[in-house]
Image 1 (tube, rainbow, N blue to C red):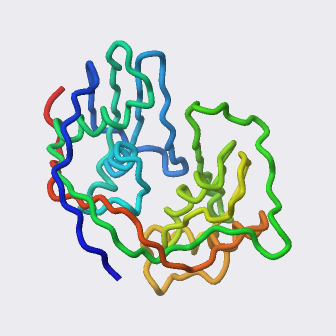
Image 2 (cartoon, rainbow, N blue to C red):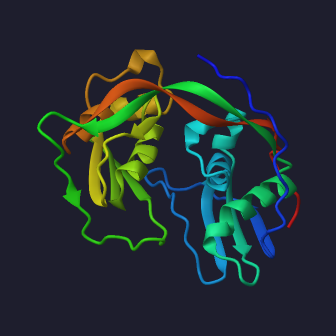
Length: 249
């Protein structure tokens, strides 16, 4: 099912970074994924972020809610922005929207589409979650995931994350977006293991490499969770135009 498009011109925000630097990022180590925004007072830093990541942060969306050319997943940048006087971190997404429109010439519209998803819910017998050893204070940056690869596969480690944040992270390794529908609150630590076959399939290995074990579904079962196939109507940002190279700093 597809819903009617909701078209509009994306607004131009008066609130922008006072100064912003955008540089093509150096390739990250093969065994590590960095997804956390870090910031000093008055500054925000995004290190080695794919353009898709910057867009979803700017519009407060999830990966699967952004439709655009495939290269936005591989084009990676280091972005540093200086906040104007009196601005707060809660206004940063709007500043990113302004930056994307100005420096990458982003033009897009919103749509609403039915997506096949996996709902993350408690399995029979209830959840078996490990409470976070170092909970993150409300309002502080969160959502760090690291990946370590060895002969047994990939170890996806996430610390002090909500189930909503975890769902977004592991959606990258699933054929469907994963949405937290568990109703479980709180922060938890996770160490999820994917088999080499599951990791290859997640990277686009093809149907012939579809794994029979060591999948995301298998990994969450360790924590008393499961993935249920469902459909859900989701807001989608459809990219009409975007430049591969930003205008100069």
